Length: 116
Image 1 (cartoon, rainbow, N blue to C red):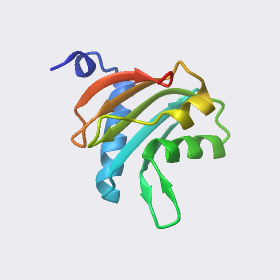
Image 2: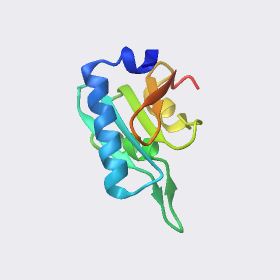
Image 3: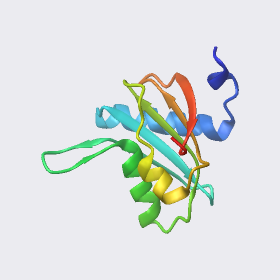
């Protein structure tokens, strides 16, 4: 077990579970979950339509913003790739939000932040 998995808090483990379940249910390329500053969670899958393409993290940010959230405490992104675009999360919550990245199976491999 690597350091990212070993150091996972119960709250972050919940985000992993939400992101994994949402991605699987939607049969999407990626899934994400975020926790806002009030402890509310938002989970979403990526959207790939002809005229609308959003990453799962972008959908989560939009959900938080439209729900009146004032910032993010943490984010998890599960995807087949390694690169995660955190621009929308940074625009909303600033540069210091931790972002955990993992594969579709929920196994985390990278700890980064909205700093990029």
